[in-house]
Length: 385
Picture: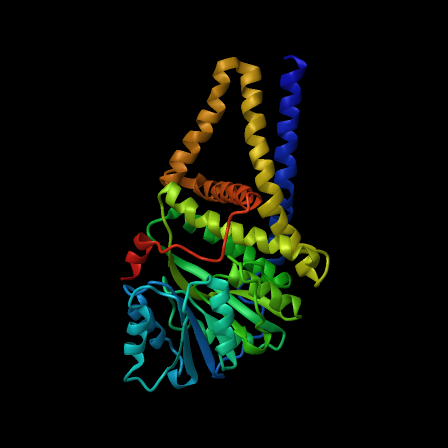
């Protein structure tokens, strides 16, 4: 073996070791703490007033079923107002008004936007209009467990807690890749919450003390996570509670799934960068949780990308044209993983798939892409009709 292949193999071994070490440390911390459930001092039985914020855009096919689901939550509807902020071009606002026309509860606040200005702008307007003690944000294209609001309120009774989110208990649309990643993510977020606070909040269901809600950036594409981070910055903990369950649809086909995941990744990366000043402060949140997320979302995808390149070069240097077996094996891994056909290796592919999305998202952000609007995904919405 000449020097060049040896050097390439040394680089590859170094990349693999450096990339994996923080994850091993995090696993060790998880095993040591053995976290379960929410760390909040939950108090059941209280029924504060609640504002449910529902942003809508061309939801005429699914908005009525979403409103019916909200009205079916295990909570006194006379204590609930629904704040719908709408910028639709279809009949969505008319359907909303018709749905509430003969109902005494919950009450309706309908904000009709004259033009579409982006989700964050719409949410800021809705949060400002919300009048109750607890503010819940949910999406039309999701379904929430009937007891989710009671679980959220129980968390928020802890005076140290300003926000809470839940877990995707069922991934609609048949994506085992997304389900595998969400299962891993739930374990990470449980540990983060027991250390201090979690980083990622989820659009299908997030709840906040109204007094803790502050405006988010008008161009935000990770509105729930940004609001949670700002709440933590204000001094309150923001938690993940696996007892709060929801359903969300996700694509199983590779290119469609990545269109959905890349956009989410862009939003998270932007929030991390803009709030980089929180690193090192705010207790374990700035000293452990945020550094881990910086590693997972920024550093690790770059190292994984570099590792794939070095492995390919090492294969070519060692075996000439036969070294193309390395990228061929990777392509097979991706192809089988995208078809949910890797068996026990499927969780590893789910994490790799997320690293790919994060790397692509970083490139998109560097190109100046990403705004506060979102495209209607008719295929995913079929799951809720």
